[in-house]
Image (cartoon, rainbow, N blue to C red):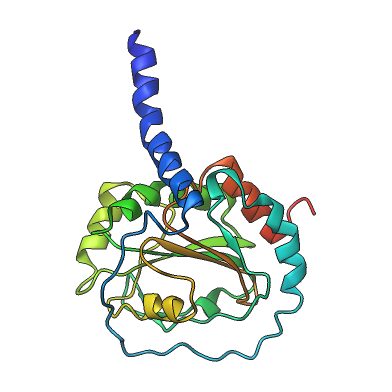
Length: 226
């Protein structure tokens, strides 16, 4: 085998590995998730938000055919409801909320440095943000490491995750809120929200988010090409 072919094989291995993991998640949603035995209740509670999510049903219908391939484990929410999470911290220690990004479709991802599938998924989320992030869409990745944010900061720097700012929830309140909503069973966990905060669907376990299947799903959610 030539040196060039060997290099290509090595470069493809991480993405192929993630695709294999995601395929397994498609068969049994959440089966590859790293399960949390207990989660701290935290200081915040899930907010009740008065939002009319009826229009989101049209978006759900549009994206449903795209829950396939690398994102076959994506579970479409046929009855969209507003979702709000407790405040989390920015890299500078300031409070942030999902509502701060209203108007954008958001892929909200919960991850931790101790979660191996999460670590393997982060480059894919970074790639998705680079490909489609902008005024209409963003990946909102919230780290759940307890204690300080030193470890997640080091991880993002070491792995060159340069398109995703650090958001940190040391209380695990974000996970508890998604668990209470019945859409998070372990890590990683992702939910797709429209610009009003209505939940369009969810996925437990990792996915090849930078791939064509995932990008087609996101484009359908933001109405690109519709």
